[in-house]
Each structure stands twice: as structure tokens, then as C-alpha cells.
Image (cartoon, one colour):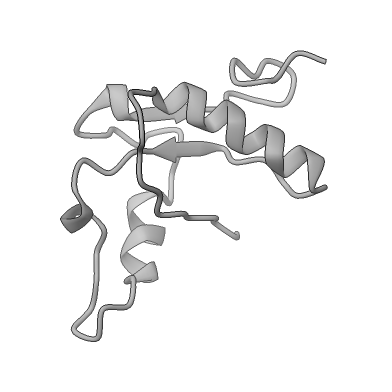
Amino acid sequence: RTMAAAIVTLRQETTAEDLLRRANAALDRAGQPRLALLEIAPTPEAIPLGATGKVLKRQLREKYAALETYRPADPKAVAVAVSADHDPTAVPA
């Protein structure tokens, strides 16, 4: 299963739900699959990096392997798209 990841800088106070809604709207416009989960890392150090500075993708895959049971350290920093039928992050047409 493919997992998209992005590192962004927050320029204003925003919520994970708002970022997920905006990201999925942009992905929809580009004809790409929607994100199932968006988590805001509390600090840059929360991103697992190897000795060469590359993101340790294996650790991220393990962390998010079972989205149904994933429990974040800070629930306010996570937004989950429930399903295509009932997506609280859906952008109104």
C-alpha cells in the first residue's frame, strides 16, 4: 500500500482537519488518491531520520500500518477521513 507523506511549515494557526480537507481538495483536482490520514508532527525531530538525513520510511510504514487502531500522542494533531461515503473532510461541491 502506498502512503503519501509531506513535510510542511505551518504559517498560521490551523487544524489537522482543515489541512486534510485542503490537501484532499488539491489531490482531487489533480486526479490523485485522497489521503486517509494527516498528522501534524509536533516538532521536526518527530520525523524519523537516518544518519544521512533521509526519512526512515520503514518506521513510518510500521507506525501507520493499521489506521483503524492508530492512536496518536496528540489527538488534536490528527485528522482521519472515515470513508468515501462519509468523509468529514470532504469539500462541498
